[in-house]
Image (cartoon, one colour):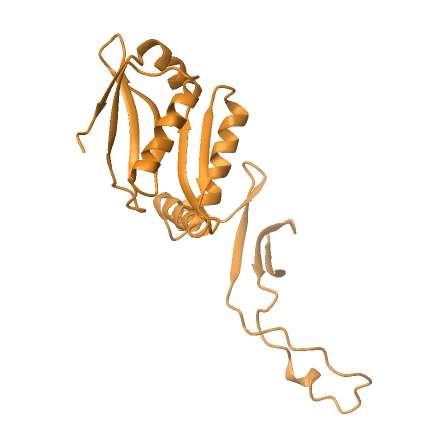
Length: 213
């Protein structure tokens, strides 16, 4: 970016300035056709780029302004949507790493947090299990009866999301922990239940209610 035109007030102070791209305009051809040139001309860098920014000085606050957000050409919602698309594009091929880093971050901030995961033989994320500290505490008070529901497949991976839940003394549903599995084999559910008991400090529920499958 480089400075371009300026406008001054009657006291000679700059009140308006235009900034342009450093590739704005064309190089004057007369500098390219010199016969007595002592060295080669520099590489052409100007490509008539139209990008420019005009700012005005607001004396009331002493700041340079463009004219307000209403002149930006997009809304706040457009901005948020763009940021969301950018973030999604960054994690599209790295969801497994993002999930693992999330577990690590949670464990650093929550001393009672429990997280566990396994990999396949080709180093792909296989199963993942997590439980926050407060739900673990809740389980020791309200975990005598646990509902075990594996019917949640409404995610972009179409994998079973298993929810362990219970009911507190107010009759409200309490989520104890969750697990995202790669399949629904007996071996997988064995791993899940063993991990659940491990997360809860070895305490097993007296009654487990399943979805019936």
